[in-house]
Length: 214
Image (cartoon, rainbow, N blue to C red; front, side, top):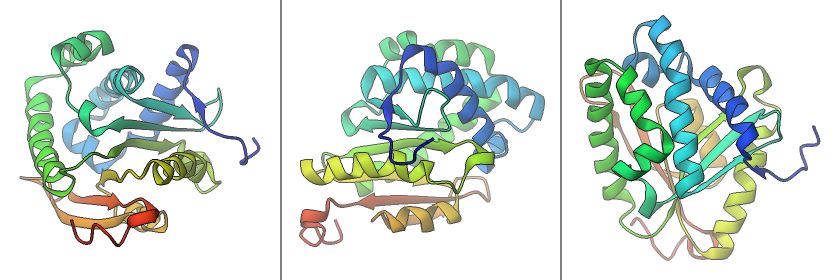
């Protein structure tokens, strides 16, 4: 694939390969191994989880892929659309995941959600875009796909003068995101775990200095 190609807005027929890319990328991720400790259960639930997250992105934000083969995928949400209403849960298929997950998984998800939401409100109490999920198939990482997905949106956010917020549990990711202009605003641990958690914010280039440490 030509890395100069622009990301494509996801089509309905690309959702299944996008689910596979996300499930493969996050199958051994510390957050998801904590949420779903049993590997067999995790392999069964991750596709359901990521399917509704993709649909949430399609309904309320923007989902881009590198190509129909979905080497990589990025889900972007405006700050007003981060919460899952019952209507969105129904339309996105989230209820199917909830029915399939056991109570302990749902309890851990709630713990994480409260923690992450508090940090989000603290560090981004103004209009902004959210890089909700970014993934590249493990065997294709380091080949420019992530940059392809990120750069196009960040250039647009600069034109629109909008900040961008994200959260990650990977120190390596923080280094990568800093190269794109994101600054670490908070570093902590998910309650009751040893899993690190970073909140990061990128100011649009035109007024990066104007907002200061907001």
